[in-house]
Length: 443
Image 1 (cartoon, rainbow, N blue to C red):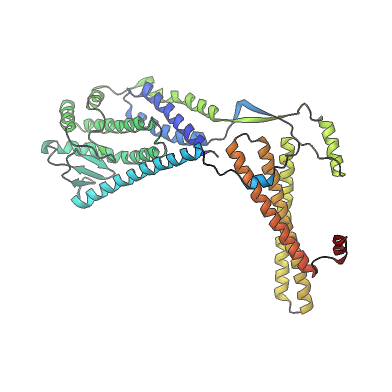
Image 2: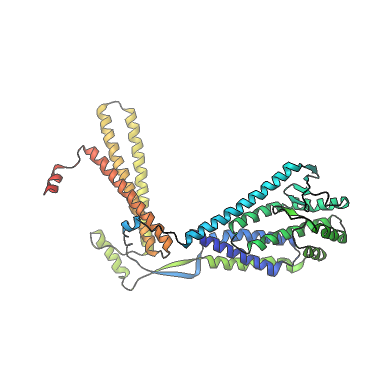
C-alpha cells in the first residue's frame, strides 16, 4: 500500500475487529490451543490483509474517456509547497511512539541478560535455571527459568518447574516477542494492549493444564496459584507463573475442556476476514465516453488524421496504457540492439591496429552513443506521459504533489539526455553550427 497512514489505520481496525470477536465468542471457551492459534492468526491477518490489492466487485469509479493527458506547468511542479502540515506532525508523533516502545523492548531484553549474567544458571531437565533474589514470582523466557527460591516452597518446586517447562516446550516466548513487536507497530491502537494480555493469559491456561496432566492434584495446585499470587512486580518480557487474574485461572482449571461443535467456533471469523477483504478492496475503474467526446468511429478517424499531422487523438485509458507500453517495449528493444552494436564495435576496435579503420570505428561508436542518449531522452518523455496520465486521475493532494515532483525530475533528466546527445553530435561533426544556420540567426 502506498499510504503508510492508511495501512496503519486499516491494520489497527482489523486487529480490533478480530479481538472483539475473540472477546465476545471465544474468551470463555477452554480449547486454549485453538484460542492461542486464533490470536496469533488475528495478528498476522491484521498485518497482511491491508496489503492485499483486490478489485472491488461492488465499488467502481467511472472515468469519462479523456483526451491525451494535459501537460502541467513544470515551473510550478519544480517548486512544490514545503509547508509542514498535520500529516507530517502525525508522522513524527507515530515514529516517536514506535521508537519509544522499541527502546523499552530492548531495555527489557537487556534486563533479562543482566539478570542471567549476575546470577548465573544451572541446568535442570533441559532448562537453564537462574536462581536469583528478585522480589517477584518465578518466570521463564525461552529456555531460561528464573526462580526465587525464598518465594517457592521446596515441596512445590517441581510443580513450578513443570509449569515453566510447559511455557518453554510450547514456545510461548516467541508469541511474546511477536506481540511486543506488534505493540511497537500499533502502539496507538487501544486494542493491542488487551490483545497482549489475552495472549499471555492463554499461555498461563495452557501451562496450568500441563501441570494438571502431570498428575498434580487440582486443589493443591489451585492453592499454589494463590500462594504465588503474592509477590513483586512481574518482568514484562517473560512467561510467568502469574500473568492473568488469579480468579480466572482457578475458574478455568475447574472447567471441562470444550468439545463437540463448539470447537469450530474460530471458523466463524472467516466471514469477518472476507468482509474485511471486500472493505479494503480497491474500486474498479470503468471508462465511459464523455458527453463531449466523439464516438469511437470518429476517434478512430481522428487517429488516422493525427498520423497524417492532424489534431491530437483522444484515447481511452486502456488505449493510452497500451500505446505507452508498446512504445516502451520498442525502446527496450532499441536499447538492447544499441548495446549489442556497441559491444561489437568495441571488440573490433580492440582487434584492429590500422589508424584509418580505428577512426572509422570510433565515429560509428559516437553515432551509437548519440542514439543511446536519444533513447534515454525518449524513455523519460514516455515516463512523463505516464505520470501526467496518473495525475489527471489522481484526487489525493499529497499523492498529486509527489507525482508533480516526479514529473519535474523526469523533465530535467530528459533535457540532460538531449543536451548530451547534441554535444556528442556536434563533436562528431567537428563544428558548433552550420554556416547557413548562423546567417539565419543574424537575419
